[in-house]
Amino acid sequence: MSCQARREFESPEAARRLANLRQQSADGFAGDRYRYVRNPMAVAGIVQGIAVGWYLGSYAVIVYSLVGAVLWHVVVRPVEEAGLNSRFGKTYTEYRQRVRLWLPALG
Image (cartoon, rainbow, N blue to C red):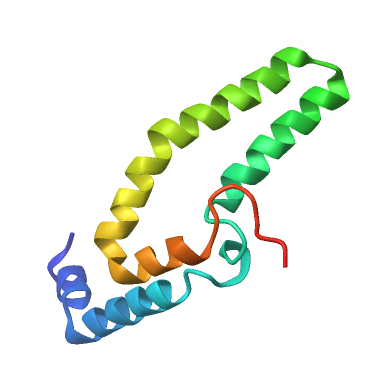
């Protein structure tokens, strides 16, 4: 990184922008797509895999999707949630208590 870029990156203005982004991120846990389930992309990917398997009449694709869901739940999710918890602390803990992991609360 050049000296000029480093000065701009380490400037007080950059620090304020970064703090503002972190606050928006912490405040926005339940915003939009993360309001109903904590991992909408994982849920969508799993549902899409199952739907493709059903459409193709392929039990192998359905099983592959379900195995992927289990692996994601057991291997990826704990690491991801530990990182979010260490980054956002109480805010993330409260979010986890409000929003379900896999199935949205209806009502």
